Image (cartoon, rainbow, N blue to C red; front, side, top):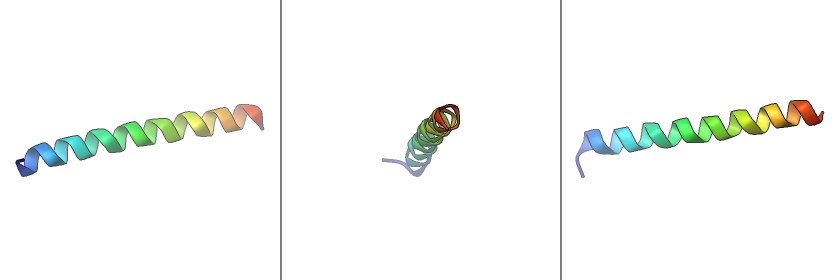
Length: 32
């Protein structure tokens, strides 16, 4: 696997993780 492909997939994973964390944070604020 080339380095550029690894960086691309890693950044995509980070975006998904941050999006999940943001959704959890919003849900916690609404519940709180």
